[in-house]
Image 1 (spheres, helix red, strand yellow):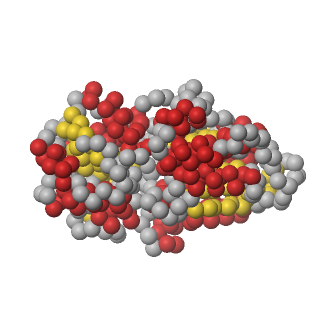
Image 2 (cartoon, rainbow, N blue to C red):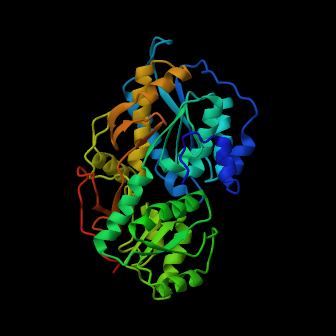
Length: 424
């Protein structure tokens, strides 16, 4: 995988020219753009493209609740002091649904900047939302706080000056994956299953770079198009090769179809770990029956984490409990990361005390504080790597299926909740 250092957005578009994200970003960028100055108004306006509908809507499920909560917590403190106004200004946020479409994400970001004249942008929800939005922010020199997208995939669109991302690095993700597998003692034969998109390509290429040197064999039958109904040839090949690990990156409906067909064909590996599609309770519940039992995925954040909000002082369990009480829904890992965008915003604007975009950018760049997801401090390449561990879905007491941390690796401050077991 190419590193982001020195790679321009034009190189990114050439590299993944067949992807919707690249086409969308490439087609919408004007040939000449000037910095967009702050509008004269008595509030701070945050732009927020979010995938509320479409195949990655799970990444936007908590967005409306978190944005309401984050704005209220800041405004209950009177807002944020802005020196040129000589007073505290309240925060407002304008969220717009991208419909999970990368082209839409870029176009929405452009409208928020040019028409609404937002002061800062927030964005989260896979490279399909984050990459086009941050590209537009770079073009127009608007500060952007981003999360919930793998750092390496984001860096391919760099270098960045105005955009900042906190999430997990591949060196964090893959130890969580193989850390779980090696607790089970598999034969190290992996059946690869990856979507034909930017995320899928990246996971396949990175798997070959990281896992093969560790002694893993990868049975790769090729990238899978969205909406594929018949996985029988792939599953038959896995059976023939004695696959004990299924691994990859799929959208949730396609993984559900594949996993159900594995059951129908009598194929049961020791472990199945799938990026993107095994993160959220709604996707797990949609699989049906007993099929979710024992599935594994990376785990970003949850109620047992030891951190606290820098705005209010409460902990992850408090945030999760509030979500569940208000919505009647199970907590979702995105809650903490999305909430932390408001912590970064609050921290940076209190330092900048200005709506000048360069001053805001400088304040974000100097971020170094403890947030509800852990310490956030950006590198010179504008990213911050936070801990990623491994979790397994098991039958729950409060909810039908609950994720439990089974592997934390070097992150000793994150408690292990149970021992991993093979898929029953």
